[in-house]
Length: 147
Image: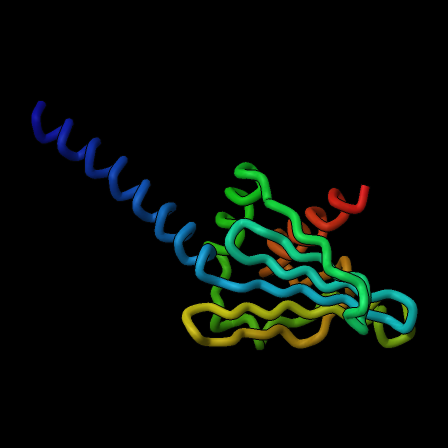
């Protein structure tokens, strides 16, 4: 009986430490999503449970800074946790609408533990499958703040 209780406690403890580690990892990480065309610009920077949203490529307007709710932050932590950072530069874009002005040109940059990871360009609203949940969550946070 004591062994069962010990195993259960270890399982709960290890599970919590893994999620705390992911949260600590993203807390010390900067994620930048940028989408741009001739008439559209959006840059979203996620850092320390805050989002900085800019729609002015010339940076004349002050970017909007918003606090990310605990629920949204938890989702971001989970999506970040499942990404293999080393694969980010090799991700393939699922569509090429940006080549004929059918979509804005987008990319994702992650600065994690003093190392940069950057995707190749992809279509805004059509990210590579491996990062789609993270990118779509970031974009949805910016949309929520516009309303």
